[in-house]
Figure (tube, helix red, strand yellow):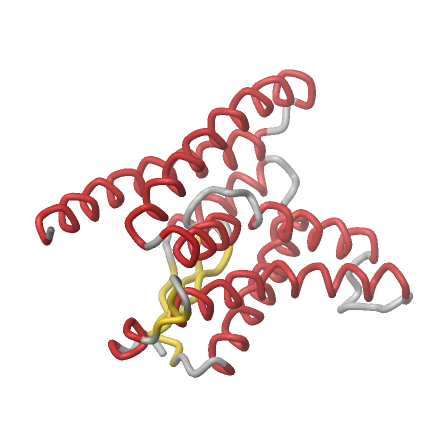
Amino acid sequence: MKIRINLKIFLFILIFILTKQIKVYGVLMLFAFIHELGHMLVGILLGFKPDKLEIMPYGVSASFNVKCEDYNKKIKRGNMLAIKKLLIALAGPLTNFIITIIFLVANVNFFGIERELVIYSNILIGIFNLIPIYPLDGGRVIKNILHIIVGLQNSYEYTNQISKITICLLTAICSIAILYIKNVALLLILAYLWYLVIVENKRYNRKIQILNSLE
């Protein structure tokens, strides 16, 4: 498995040092890594081989090798591969929520990190990743459910539209929140989400062009 570090992470570290939130950032990155281990564990159990682990400014991302024959295993109108990907997408947030429950019901010490910070970090990571913007886990869940129900091409279209609507709503909410809270982290998160939507929209347009050329 290849491991890659995105150098922009050092810029984020500098920003959080200057804003005196480096400890929070460090804890978030730690549980983001554990979140990704949840994805990897379920992926391995479902027969996928981990391909790449990328450490990025906003967390950690794992990818898997997919066997060509998996694309041909049909279940009703869906696909076995879509079901597997759905389970893998849910595994990460579920890992964070399990950790949250453990720390809520038990007074557990985790490397000296305050219990409240552990709970806050895992709730934040779990909820953030369930935002219905592709390729966040929430977007992947929606895409794979739609793939099973309405087919591959329609799942691309609907997921893309849901991502656009979601980012517009979040921009309105975050704009108001930033005015009152004045937290630079919200601005960084919003900028990152816009980046995801723009990049994925370009990929979506390329995919549609390819699918249309095959018809």
